[in-house]
Image (cartoon, rainbow, N blue to C red; front, top):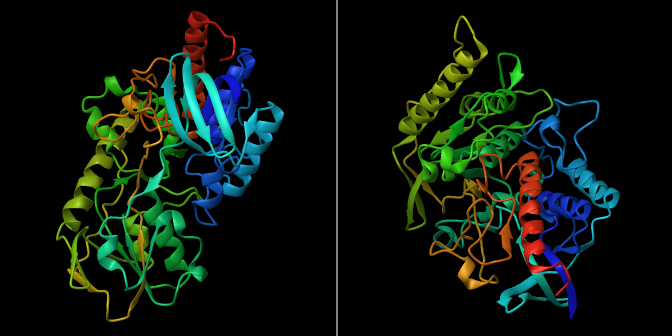
Amino acid sequence: MKHADVVIIGGGQAGLALSHCLGRAGIDHVVLERGRIGERWRTQSWRSLRLLTPNWLNGLPGSPYDGPDPDGFRTKDVFVHDLETYASRWQVPVECKVEVTSCRRTGGGFALATGAGDWLARVVVVATGHCDRPMMPFVSETRGGPLNIHASQYRSPGELPPGGVLIVGASSSGVQIADELARAGRRVMLSVGKHTRLPRLWRGKDIFFWLCQMGVMAQPLDGLANPESARRQPSLQLAGRPDKANVDLATLQALGVELTGRVRGIANREIAFADDLAAQIAAADAKQGRLLAEIDRFAGAARPGRREPVPTPSARRQRLSLTEGSTGTVIWATGYARSFDWLEPSAVGPDGELAHRDGITSVPGLYALGFRFLRKRDSNFIGGAGVDAQAIAAEVSSYLDRKGRQAA
Protein backbone atom coordinates (compact mmCIF):
# COMPACT_ATOMS: atom_id res chain seq x y z
CA MET A 1 0.00 0.00 0.00
CA LYS A 2 1.38 3.40 -1.06
CA HIS A 3 0.45 6.74 0.50
CA ALA A 4 0.24 10.38 -0.61
CA ASP A 5 -1.56 13.44 0.65
CA VAL A 6 -2.83 14.08 -2.89
CA VAL A 7 -3.29 11.74 -5.84
CA ILE A 8 -3.81 13.42 -9.22
CA ILE A 9 -5.41 11.09 -11.77
CA GLY A 10 -4.24 12.02 -15.27
CA GLY A 11 -0.90 13.11 -16.68
CA GLY A 12 -1.98 15.58 -19.35
CA GLN A 13 -1.58 19.34 -19.24
CA ALA A 14 -4.10 19.76 -16.39
CA GLY A 15 -2.57 17.13 -14.12
CA LEU A 16 0.98 18.35 -14.76
CA ALA A 17 -0.02 21.97 -14.14
CA LEU A 18 -1.61 21.05 -10.82
CA SER A 19 1.47 19.05 -9.83
CA HIS A 20 3.61 22.15 -10.39
CA CYS A 21 1.31 24.23 -8.20
CA LEU A 22 1.20 21.63 -5.41
CA GLY A 23 4.96 21.16 -5.59
CA ARG A 24 5.55 24.89 -5.19
CA ALA A 25 3.33 24.77 -2.10
CA GLY A 26 5.27 21.85 -0.64
CA ILE A 27 2.30 19.48 -0.77
CA ASP A 28 3.05 15.75 -0.97
CA HIS A 29 1.45 14.31 -4.08
CA VAL A 30 1.73 11.88 -7.00
CA VAL A 31 0.37 11.89 -10.55
CA LEU A 32 -1.00 8.56 -11.81
CA GLU A 33 -1.18 8.29 -15.61
CA ARG A 34 -2.75 5.27 -17.34
CA GLY A 35 -0.39 5.58 -20.32
CA ARG A 36 2.39 8.05 -20.97
CA ILE A 37 2.49 11.78 -20.33
CA GLY A 38 0.01 13.35 -22.76
CA GLU A 39 -1.30 9.92 -23.80
CA ARG A 40 -4.40 11.15 -25.60
CA TRP A 41 -2.38 13.63 -27.63
CA ARG A 42 -0.20 10.71 -28.71
CA THR A 43 -2.78 8.04 -29.49
CA GLN A 44 -6.18 9.67 -30.05
CA SER A 45 -5.49 12.21 -32.79
CA TRP A 46 -4.40 12.30 -36.41
CA ARG A 47 -0.76 12.61 -37.40
CA SER A 48 -0.85 16.15 -38.81
CA LEU A 49 -2.85 17.69 -35.96
CA ARG A 50 -1.85 21.13 -34.72
CA LEU A 51 -3.19 22.94 -31.68
CA LEU A 52 -6.20 25.19 -32.32
CA THR A 53 -4.92 27.89 -29.99
CA PRO A 54 -1.90 30.09 -30.78
CA ASN A 55 1.30 29.45 -28.85
CA TRP A 56 0.97 32.57 -26.69
CA LEU A 57 -2.23 31.15 -25.21
CA ASN A 58 -0.78 27.75 -24.29
CA GLY A 59 1.46 28.51 -21.33
CA LEU A 60 1.31 26.48 -18.12
CA PRO A 61 2.06 27.63 -14.55
CA GLY A 62 5.76 28.46 -14.29
CA SER A 63 6.27 28.10 -18.05
CA PRO A 64 4.68 30.82 -20.18
CA TYR A 65 5.42 30.59 -23.89
CA ASP A 66 8.72 32.32 -24.66
CA GLY A 67 9.54 30.92 -28.08
CA PRO A 68 10.10 32.68 -31.41
CA ASP A 69 6.61 32.14 -32.86
CA PRO A 70 3.92 33.31 -30.41
CA ASP A 71 1.26 33.44 -33.12
CA GLY A 72 2.06 29.98 -34.53
CA PHE A 73 0.42 26.64 -33.83
CA ARG A 74 2.45 23.77 -32.44
CA THR A 75 2.12 20.26 -33.83
CA LYS A 76 0.81 17.66 -31.43
CA ASP A 77 4.24 15.96 -31.37
CA VAL A 78 5.97 19.19 -30.37
CA PHE A 79 3.36 19.78 -27.70
CA VAL A 80 3.82 16.28 -26.24
CA HIS A 81 7.57 16.94 -26.12
CA ASP A 82 6.85 20.22 -24.33
CA LEU A 83 4.72 18.38 -21.76
CA GLU A 84 7.54 15.92 -21.14
CA THR A 85 9.99 18.80 -20.77
CA TYR A 86 7.63 20.55 -18.35
CA ALA A 87 7.31 17.40 -16.23
CA SER A 88 11.09 16.98 -16.14
CA ARG A 89 11.80 20.64 -15.42
CA TRP A 90 9.42 20.77 -12.47
CA GLN A 91 10.23 17.24 -11.30
CA VAL A 92 6.64 16.09 -11.50
CA PRO A 93 6.25 12.85 -9.48
CA VAL A 94 4.40 11.02 -12.25
CA GLU A 95 3.94 7.26 -12.40
CA CYS A 96 3.12 6.16 -15.95
CA LYS A 97 1.34 2.99 -17.08
CA VAL A 98 -0.71 3.08 -13.88
CA GLU A 99 -4.46 2.97 -14.51
CA VAL A 100 -6.80 3.74 -11.64
CA THR A 101 -9.59 1.17 -11.70
CA SER A 102 -11.37 2.22 -8.51
CA CYS A 103 -11.48 5.27 -6.24
CA ARG A 104 -13.67 5.07 -3.14
CA ARG A 105 -14.14 7.28 -0.12
CA THR A 106 -12.85 5.86 3.17
CA GLY A 107 -12.89 7.17 6.72
CA GLY A 108 -9.60 8.99 6.36
CA GLY A 109 -9.64 9.88 2.69
CA PHE A 110 -9.66 7.71 -0.43
CA ALA A 111 -8.65 4.19 -1.37
CA LEU A 112 -7.49 3.78 -4.95
CA ALA A 113 -6.99 0.49 -6.75
CA THR A 114 -4.61 0.38 -9.74
CA GLY A 115 -3.01 -2.28 -11.87
CA ALA A 116 0.28 -1.50 -10.11
CA GLY A 117 -0.91 -1.65 -6.50
CA ASP A 118 -3.18 0.26 -4.14
CA TRP A 119 -2.94 3.82 -2.84
CA LEU A 120 -4.34 5.75 0.09
CA ALA A 121 -4.76 9.51 -0.20
CA ARG A 122 -6.35 12.36 1.71
CA VAL A 123 -7.24 14.19 -1.49
CA VAL A 124 -7.94 13.03 -5.04
CA VAL A 125 -8.07 15.29 -8.09
CA VAL A 126 -9.67 13.88 -11.24
CA ALA A 127 -7.81 15.34 -14.24
CA THR A 128 -8.68 12.68 -16.79
CA GLY A 129 -9.76 15.14 -19.48
CA HIS A 130 -12.95 16.05 -21.29
CA CYS A 131 -12.32 13.72 -24.25
CA ASP A 132 -12.72 10.38 -22.52
CA ARG A 133 -15.08 7.92 -24.23
CA PRO A 134 -15.67 8.39 -27.98
CA MET A 135 -19.35 8.67 -28.93
CA MET A 136 -20.47 6.87 -32.10
CA PRO A 137 -24.25 7.02 -32.54
CA PHE A 138 -25.85 4.52 -34.92
CA VAL A 139 -22.60 2.56 -35.20
CA SER A 140 -24.30 -0.78 -34.54
CA GLU A 141 -26.54 -0.19 -37.57
CA THR A 142 -23.50 0.22 -39.86
CA ARG A 143 -21.63 -2.97 -38.95
CA GLY A 144 -20.72 -5.15 -41.87
CA GLY A 145 -20.52 -2.23 -44.27
CA PRO A 146 -17.82 0.43 -44.68
CA LEU A 147 -15.08 0.87 -42.09
CA ASN A 148 -16.53 2.73 -39.10
CA ILE A 149 -14.13 4.71 -36.93
CA HIS A 150 -14.30 7.60 -34.50
CA ALA A 151 -12.36 10.78 -35.31
CA SER A 152 -9.96 9.84 -32.50
CA GLN A 153 -9.00 6.72 -34.51
CA TYR A 154 -8.27 8.56 -37.76
CA ARG A 155 -4.56 8.95 -38.55
CA SER A 156 -4.03 9.95 -42.22
CA PRO A 157 -5.64 9.64 -45.68
CA GLY A 158 -3.31 6.82 -46.72
CA GLU A 159 -4.36 4.65 -43.79
CA LEU A 160 -8.02 4.49 -44.86
CA PRO A 161 -9.41 1.90 -47.28
CA PRO A 162 -10.15 2.99 -50.86
CA GLY A 163 -13.37 4.77 -51.67
CA GLY A 164 -15.26 7.82 -50.56
CA VAL A 165 -15.42 9.02 -46.96
CA LEU A 166 -18.48 10.15 -45.05
CA ILE A 167 -17.64 12.34 -42.05
CA VAL A 168 -20.42 12.82 -39.52
CA GLY A 169 -19.98 16.06 -37.57
CA ALA A 170 -18.75 19.48 -38.70
CA SER A 171 -17.04 20.87 -35.63
CA SER A 172 -13.29 21.19 -35.16
CA SER A 173 -12.23 17.60 -35.87
CA GLY A 174 -14.76 16.99 -38.62
CA VAL A 175 -13.82 19.99 -40.76
CA GLN A 176 -10.08 19.47 -40.30
CA ILE A 177 -10.26 15.81 -41.30
CA ALA A 178 -12.49 16.68 -44.26
CA ASP A 179 -9.99 19.32 -45.35
CA GLU A 180 -7.05 16.90 -45.16
CA LEU A 181 -8.87 14.13 -47.03
CA ALA A 182 -10.12 16.45 -49.77
CA ARG A 183 -6.64 17.85 -50.32
CA ALA A 184 -5.39 14.26 -50.61
CA GLY A 185 -7.81 13.67 -53.48
CA ARG A 186 -10.46 11.73 -51.56
CA ARG A 187 -14.15 12.12 -52.32
CA VAL A 188 -15.63 13.48 -49.09
CA MET A 189 -19.16 13.97 -47.85
CA LEU A 190 -19.71 15.95 -44.65
CA SER A 191 -22.85 15.51 -42.57
CA VAL A 192 -23.42 18.89 -40.89
CA GLY A 193 -25.19 19.39 -37.58
CA LYS A 194 -25.00 22.24 -35.11
CA HIS A 195 -21.64 24.01 -35.40
CA THR A 196 -19.82 27.21 -34.45
CA ARG A 197 -18.22 29.12 -37.32
CA LEU A 198 -15.46 31.64 -36.60
CA PRO A 199 -12.70 33.23 -38.69
CA ARG A 200 -9.10 32.40 -37.81
CA LEU A 201 -8.17 36.08 -38.09
CA TRP A 202 -10.34 39.15 -37.56
CA ARG A 203 -9.11 42.71 -38.00
CA GLY A 204 -5.57 41.40 -38.38
CA LYS A 205 -5.56 39.50 -35.06
CA ASP A 206 -6.17 35.87 -34.15
CA ILE A 207 -9.77 35.38 -33.06
CA PHE A 208 -8.54 34.30 -29.62
CA PHE A 209 -6.86 37.68 -29.17
CA TRP A 210 -10.28 39.31 -29.29
CA LEU A 211 -11.99 36.64 -27.20
CA CYS A 212 -9.36 37.06 -24.49
CA GLN A 213 -9.29 40.87 -24.63
CA MET A 214 -13.08 41.01 -24.30
CA GLY A 215 -13.04 38.60 -21.35
CA VAL A 216 -15.05 35.97 -23.19
CA MET A 217 -12.63 33.13 -22.46
CA ALA A 218 -12.58 33.97 -18.74
CA GLN A 219 -16.37 34.10 -18.37
CA PRO A 220 -17.53 32.00 -15.41
CA LEU A 221 -20.39 29.59 -15.99
CA ASP A 222 -22.75 31.34 -13.59
CA GLY A 223 -22.15 34.61 -15.43
CA LEU A 224 -23.73 33.29 -18.63
CA ALA A 225 -27.36 33.83 -19.57
CA ASN A 226 -27.82 30.15 -20.50
CA PRO A 227 -25.14 27.97 -18.86
CA GLU A 228 -26.54 24.65 -20.12
CA SER A 229 -26.66 25.90 -23.69
CA ALA A 230 -23.05 27.05 -23.34
CA ARG A 231 -22.02 23.60 -22.09
CA ARG A 232 -23.57 22.00 -25.17
CA GLN A 233 -21.94 24.40 -27.64
CA PRO A 234 -19.94 22.50 -30.27
CA SER A 235 -16.19 22.99 -30.47
CA LEU A 236 -15.05 25.90 -32.62
CA GLN A 237 -14.81 25.37 -36.37
CA LEU A 238 -11.14 26.35 -36.51
CA ALA A 239 -7.78 24.89 -37.52
CA GLY A 240 -4.25 25.78 -36.46
CA ARG A 241 -2.75 25.97 -39.95
CA PRO A 242 0.70 27.51 -40.51
CA ASP A 243 -0.83 29.83 -43.13
CA LYS A 244 -3.60 30.81 -40.66
CA ALA A 245 -6.21 30.05 -43.29
CA ASN A 246 -9.85 29.41 -42.45
CA VAL A 247 -11.22 25.87 -42.52
CA ASP A 248 -15.01 25.95 -42.62
CA LEU A 249 -17.93 24.88 -44.78
CA ALA A 250 -17.17 27.53 -47.40
CA THR A 251 -13.53 26.50 -47.86
CA LEU A 252 -14.50 22.81 -47.87
CA GLN A 253 -17.04 23.34 -50.63
CA ALA A 254 -14.32 25.05 -52.65
CA LEU A 255 -12.28 21.84 -52.30
CA GLY A 256 -15.16 19.74 -53.61
CA VAL A 257 -16.52 18.45 -50.30
CA GLU A 258 -20.21 17.55 -50.55
CA LEU A 259 -22.35 18.91 -47.69
CA THR A 260 -25.52 17.35 -46.38
CA GLY A 261 -27.70 17.53 -43.28
CA ARG A 262 -27.24 15.73 -39.99
CA VAL A 263 -27.72 11.98 -39.77
CA ARG A 264 -31.27 11.32 -38.56
CA GLY A 265 -31.26 7.53 -38.77
CA ILE A 266 -29.95 4.36 -40.36
CA ALA A 267 -32.17 1.52 -41.57
CA ASN A 268 -31.86 -1.24 -44.14
CA ARG A 269 -28.19 -0.40 -44.73
CA GLU A 270 -29.05 3.15 -45.72
CA ILE A 271 -28.26 6.44 -43.96
CA ALA A 272 -31.01 9.07 -43.92
CA PHE A 273 -30.02 12.73 -43.65
CA ALA A 274 -32.21 15.48 -42.25
CA ASP A 275 -33.21 18.32 -44.53
CA ASP A 276 -31.72 20.87 -42.14
CA LEU A 277 -28.45 21.93 -43.78
CA ALA A 278 -29.68 25.41 -44.71
CA ALA A 279 -30.99 26.01 -41.19
CA GLN A 280 -27.75 24.82 -39.55
CA ILE A 281 -25.66 27.07 -41.81
CA ALA A 282 -27.92 30.08 -41.22
CA ALA A 283 -27.84 29.62 -37.44
CA ALA A 284 -24.03 29.39 -37.37
CA ASP A 285 -23.62 32.42 -39.63
CA ALA A 286 -26.04 34.47 -37.53
CA LYS A 287 -24.25 33.59 -34.28
CA GLN A 288 -20.89 34.40 -35.85
CA GLY A 289 -22.23 37.73 -37.09
CA ARG A 290 -23.34 38.73 -33.60
CA LEU A 291 -19.93 37.91 -32.10
CA LEU A 292 -17.98 39.72 -34.82
CA ALA A 293 -20.21 42.77 -34.39
CA GLU A 294 -19.38 42.73 -30.66
CA ILE A 295 -15.68 42.58 -31.50
CA ASP A 296 -16.03 45.51 -33.91
CA ARG A 297 -17.73 47.59 -31.22
CA PHE A 298 -15.06 46.64 -28.68
CA ALA A 299 -12.31 47.55 -31.16
CA GLY A 300 -13.96 50.92 -31.83
CA ALA A 301 -14.19 50.16 -35.54
CA ALA A 302 -15.76 52.95 -37.54
CA ARG A 303 -16.96 50.50 -40.14
CA PRO A 304 -18.06 47.00 -39.08
CA GLY A 305 -16.57 44.05 -40.91
CA ARG A 306 -18.55 41.32 -42.59
CA ARG A 307 -17.80 37.76 -43.64
CA GLU A 308 -19.50 36.26 -46.64
CA PRO A 309 -22.16 33.73 -45.60
CA VAL A 310 -21.59 30.08 -46.35
CA PRO A 311 -23.31 29.17 -49.62
CA THR A 312 -25.96 26.50 -49.23
CA PRO A 313 -25.82 23.79 -51.91
CA SER A 314 -28.97 23.77 -54.03
CA ALA A 315 -29.02 19.97 -54.23
CA ARG A 316 -28.53 18.05 -51.01
CA ARG A 317 -28.34 14.31 -50.64
CA GLN A 318 -31.12 12.79 -48.55
CA ARG A 319 -29.91 9.19 -48.40
CA LEU A 320 -26.68 7.21 -48.74
CA SER A 321 -26.52 3.48 -49.38
CA LEU A 322 -23.92 1.57 -47.39
CA THR A 323 -24.02 -1.39 -49.76
CA GLU A 324 -23.42 0.08 -53.21
CA GLY A 325 -19.67 0.31 -52.58
CA SER A 326 -18.79 3.95 -53.24
CA THR A 327 -18.25 4.76 -49.54
CA GLY A 328 -15.28 3.02 -47.99
CA THR A 329 -15.17 4.76 -44.60
CA VAL A 330 -17.50 6.47 -42.16
CA ILE A 331 -15.74 8.74 -39.63
CA TRP A 332 -17.79 9.78 -36.62
CA ALA A 333 -16.61 13.22 -35.47
CA THR A 334 -19.38 13.19 -32.91
CA GLY A 335 -17.63 14.07 -29.69
CA TYR A 336 -17.01 12.34 -26.39
CA ALA A 337 -18.64 11.36 -23.13
CA ARG A 338 -17.03 10.82 -19.75
CA SER A 339 -16.94 7.49 -17.93
CA PHE A 340 -16.80 7.57 -14.14
CA ASP A 341 -17.89 4.05 -13.23
CA TRP A 342 -14.58 3.67 -11.36
CA LEU A 343 -15.11 6.75 -9.20
CA GLU A 344 -16.78 7.27 -5.81
CA PRO A 345 -20.48 6.90 -6.77
CA SER A 346 -21.69 9.80 -4.63
CA ALA A 347 -19.60 12.19 -6.74
CA VAL A 348 -21.36 11.29 -9.99
CA GLY A 349 -24.59 13.03 -10.98
CA PRO A 350 -27.70 11.44 -12.51
CA ASP A 351 -26.39 12.33 -15.98
CA GLY A 352 -23.25 10.25 -15.39
CA GLU A 353 -21.01 13.32 -15.23
CA LEU A 354 -18.77 14.27 -12.32
CA ALA A 355 -20.88 16.66 -10.24
CA HIS A 356 -18.99 19.73 -9.04
CA ARG A 357 -19.08 23.47 -8.66
CA ASP A 358 -15.93 25.23 -9.83
CA GLY A 359 -14.06 21.93 -9.59
CA ILE A 360 -15.14 21.21 -6.02
CA THR A 361 -17.35 18.15 -5.57
CA SER A 362 -19.77 17.41 -2.75
CA VAL A 363 -17.40 14.67 -1.55
CA PRO A 364 -14.88 16.23 0.88
CA GLY A 365 -11.37 16.05 -0.56
CA LEU A 366 -12.44 15.20 -4.13
CA TYR A 367 -11.76 17.75 -6.87
CA ALA A 368 -11.91 18.01 -10.67
CA LEU A 369 -9.69 19.78 -13.19
CA GLY A 370 -9.45 20.18 -16.96
CA PHE A 371 -13.10 19.63 -17.83
CA ARG A 372 -15.18 21.87 -20.03
CA PHE A 373 -16.55 24.93 -18.20
CA LEU A 374 -15.06 23.67 -14.94
CA ARG A 375 -14.67 27.24 -13.65
CA LYS A 376 -14.88 29.34 -16.81
CA ARG A 377 -15.26 29.15 -20.56
CA ASP A 378 -11.62 28.19 -21.24
CA SER A 379 -11.30 25.54 -18.50
CA ASN A 380 -10.62 22.72 -20.98
CA PHE A 381 -8.18 24.81 -23.03
CA ILE A 382 -4.47 24.37 -22.28
CA GLY A 383 -3.86 27.79 -20.79
CA GLY A 384 -7.22 27.81 -19.06
CA ALA A 385 -6.50 24.51 -17.34
CA GLY A 386 -3.26 26.02 -16.06
CA VAL A 387 -5.07 28.97 -14.50
CA ASP A 388 -7.66 26.64 -12.96
CA ALA A 389 -4.86 24.47 -11.56
CA GLN A 390 -3.71 27.37 -9.40
CA ALA A 391 -7.23 27.80 -8.02
CA ILE A 392 -7.70 24.07 -7.33
CA ALA A 393 -4.26 23.92 -5.69
CA ALA A 394 -5.37 26.68 -3.31
CA GLU A 395 -8.55 24.73 -2.50
CA VAL A 396 -6.52 21.56 -1.86
CA SER A 397 -4.05 23.42 0.33
CA SER A 398 -6.86 24.93 2.40
CA TYR A 399 -8.51 21.52 2.81
CA LEU A 400 -5.28 19.88 3.93
CA ASP A 401 -4.56 22.72 6.35
CA ARG A 402 -7.88 21.93 7.99
CA LYS A 403 -7.26 18.18 8.03
CA GLY A 404 -3.50 18.11 8.57
CA ARG A 405 -0.93 17.22 5.94
CA GLN A 406 0.49 14.01 7.27
CA ALA A 407 0.13 11.46 4.49
CA ALA A 408 -2.71 8.99 4.93
